[in-house]
Length: 621
Ligand SMILES: O=S(=O)(O)O[C@H]1C[C@H](O)[C@@H](O)[C@@H]1CO
Image: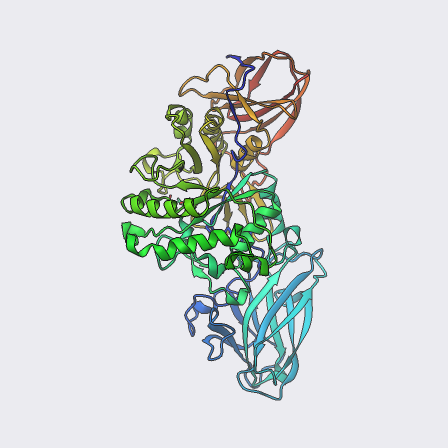
């Protein structure tokens, strides 16, 4: 294949072309990137006096534990507490433990911060101590003692640091709080708001798990879509409410997320903004827009409260503390300066509720555009279907399908009308090999495969060729706790101690780290073929990037004819492997990018391996 490259750029590569879509699905947040190690730490959204309320907690050595609706709760947001009764006649260490989110990594290089609140519902003469440990099967890796006084009838927070003496390979460890049964016999003690944190990304308080945040950061994304796809809330009752996700953790009630588990909202709006700030990326932030399942959306005359909530949410992020109370709240929480924000999404996948979106978009976009004229608002129905007023400048397209679909549709955006509308490919992934049952189980992928990642890459070549109208793209979903997930495949899998970047993660990383600032037209790939390429240039770095995608089972020989000179010394980074290969916990590095030196000339040859994604880097002379 002979490819002629044009030296005149046709369009810029927009700054946000590659980024990340986040929502708390598959324990992406709680039990994932949010670094809290204890599951069900505050008994949020559980029914007292049930076994389920004790999820992840267990009694030790004869203790009796129960989640109660506390008559004097730690806060109105956290009505439940854990009541411990130490029966008469017990001896040894008696108390309770937490198993974490399917394990707890114990690392002797880390100092852990543990804390909890306690009170005695009735004053007692008890004057002793709680032993706090990180342990497995009775072997304590870290131990600390906390004075506990029976005179403490009001809630009191206690904190200890734990430094393990070894790093067990297994993550089957527990956080425990116990008492010496002999001298604590007969005591009843209430507990609330437990927390156990390891060191965090950029040392941020209430922050992020370092290995996961680092992996995401190393993909060099430019944006972070939050707080969700579906987890924005598909019903009024379960909607995400920004204002109850900020401030002290004991004031955050949490909510039942859209994926079947309680969201603590410890990863709240301010934490999301710090994530963006610490990863030097900008948010694409959604506001809940009155959508309900089965199109039982809020009627137009009930929207005002939620439009105001959206205004307040935006002001919390970018408002002036001198003039806006929610911006002042941000300042009081330690961040007086506004955060970066350009893009605000109105709802999520409102094509499921497009009839009501006609008025919901009209009112949300109309009022928010007037309130924030410099922000850009994204519609989430199908483009121009239905027709919306005011006309959206931006649409968020989502597509999940087979690897073949992405190859067959590599020219999807070439056919789009250029009419001043720009597109966010906010969610896409090859999720199944079975076109007849994409969302079902037949052919569904557990992890991305070389074939699915190469298929996606063909589609991504189309993003660059059409970056005059495609301004942002992100694979979805981003994260998956392999111990408890609701959706597969995902970009990055993880367990309690390890991160497993997928073949699609490496493809995303390859495109994102070889972006260029402008697109150079070239001979068009064959429509519905197996070989795709794009040429971009970074005028500042004086580099030329050529991405090549070969979806064929055979290598592809190519000749590129450049209209300018390049240095002979260049590089090529390749991702390749057999079609069905995945990176997984059992084969974490089955496919990783490899980089080679490559000799360039104004006309040069390149052979793309079978099933491969390549990024060639040449240097202008
Ligand atoms: O069942 S779907 O609608 O396909 O769910 C998808 C679309 C939604 O925005 C996101 O939350 C979810 C997984 O990424």
